[in-house]
Length: 48
Length: 194
Image (cartoon, rainbow over all chains, first blue to last red; front, side, top):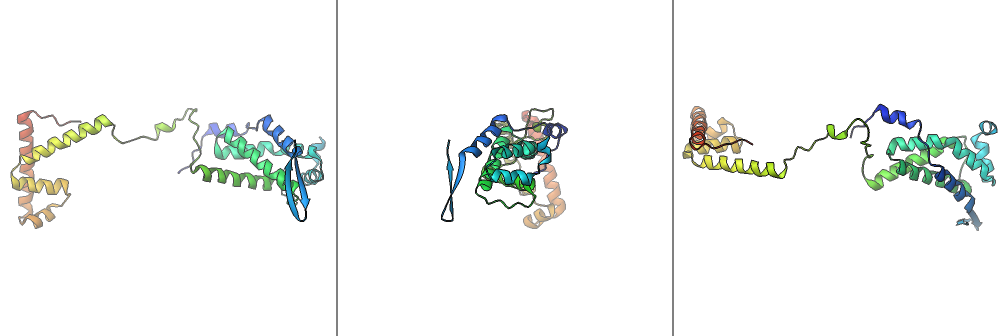
């Protein structure tokens, strides 16, 4: 299928940003996630 | 100002060593580029948001597990992850990007459905039946040539071979068949238009 290009979508791309909630979620996820090393094995734990 | 100076490599290293603020700096530094890249492929804000989130979840998990090799290519690495997730998304959905039809250009101006609707299909079937009944009224020799020519799509050479008459005779029979059909149509005032 041919790609569709239009000026509108190209202009629009410069302003797009992820939502603030998404970034906050990622930061909280990072804080909650801890990796536990145990005999060469790695376990992930989400601690809220 | 300090954020501009600190390189990605140092921030990644700080983050691995437990500095959560380093991740915030990294996300804020690259979020626009990563998100617009994803959006340029999927053209849907919610899906782009999901893929953006999954990208950074993968980044966080890889960094926390210590599985990341620092080669000074942090951004290309994130872009590769997001690219792979975009491919996964399309594989899962097995479809092309959704076209945003809210702009001036309407996709339906170039896409059309040529199939007949139910009413037109019925009219077409009736017309074809009328024509078939007209053909049945023709003398056998003319009917035979007309059916071979119009329904079997045979050439006059093939018709002449099959019927054992000359091409000119076959042409003549076809001509008379059409003249006779027109006569019947005029005589009975049959309307054959869609």
